[in-house]
Length: 81
Length: 295
Image 1 (cartoon, chains in turn green, purple):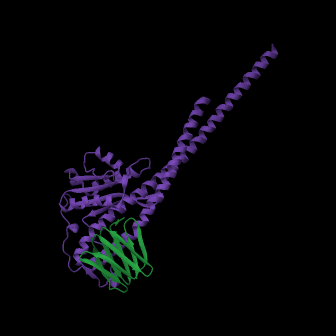
Image 2 (cartoon, one colour):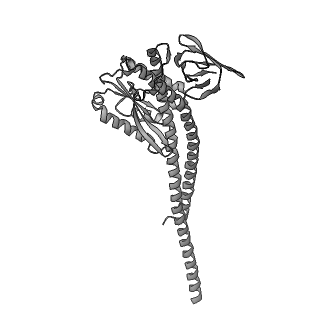
Image 3 (cartoon, each protein chain N blue to C red):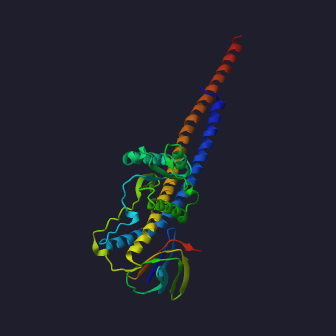
C-alpha cells in the first residue's frame, strides 16, 4: 500500500510499504494491504513502517491517519527527532 | 545653477542609495523563495486535513450538536488579529493592514468599538508599534512571532486564541492579513477564525465512504478542529511573510529604478554645468587675448 507521512512543515516519507503500525488514541494498531477505510486519531508515540527492503520508525507528537483505497495518509502534528 | 561640486556630491549619494536598494531587493528575492517553499510544503497537509474534515462533517450532518468552536454567540467582545511585518520598507504592505483593520471595525464592529470592546492582537513589530499608539486594547504577547516562525510557535498563538474564545473572553476572532497571490500582488484578507465557519458540505455524495472511526466521529472532529485552526493561522502567517518579501522586492525594484531616473537627470545637470564653465573660461581667454592684441 501507499504511505504518505506529512507534517505542516515538510513531507517526511512517501512510498510503498507492506505494513504500518500507528499509536492510535485507543491503543496501537497495524494497517496492512487493502485495509478497510479508516480515520483514526493518534496520540504521541512511535510509528513503524516496513516493506521488503525498508524498515523505519519515527516518533510523532500526535496526529490523524486516513486509510482509503489502499492509500494511507498520516498527518502528524510534529516529529520528534 | 548648482555648483559642479554640489552636483557631484548628490550623484555619489544617489549611487550609494541605489546600491542599497538593489541589495535589499536581492535579499528580499532570496527570502521570498524560502517563504514560498514553506507555503508549498504546508499546502498538501492543509488540503488533506480539510478533506478529512469535510468527509467527517458530511457524515455527521444528521447530529448537529453545538460544539464550543462553532458556537454562535451574541457578539460583545471582538479580537482582531493583525498580521504585519517586523521591518518596514515594503511599500504599502503594513499600511494596508492598518487600513484593513480600520475598515473592518468601521463596517462590522462600530458599536463594539465605541464601547471599547474591540481588542487587537498584533503579530509583527510594525503592527505592535502602530496599535500601541492607538486608543484600543492590545494583547502584544505574540508580537514577535515572526522572529522565529515555526508551526509550534504559531500553534501556541492559536491555542491562546482558542482558549480565550472557549472561556468567553471574545465572542468573535478575525484575522487580517495579506494573502500571497504573486510577487507583485497581495490581497488583503479578513477571515473569521472563530467561531468556525462550517465547511461547505459538498453536494456530490460520491465522496461518502463508510469509514471506521477510531475513537468516535465526534471525538475525531473535536481533535481535528484545533489542528485545522492551527494550520489556518500558520498558513496566514506564511502567506503574510511571503507577501511581505514580495512587496519589499517590488518596492525596492521601484526605488532602484527611480534612483536610476534621478541619476540620469543629475548627470545631465552635471555635464551642462561643466560645459557652461568651460565655455565661460574660453570666452574669458579669448576676451583677454583680444584685449592684449588691441593694446
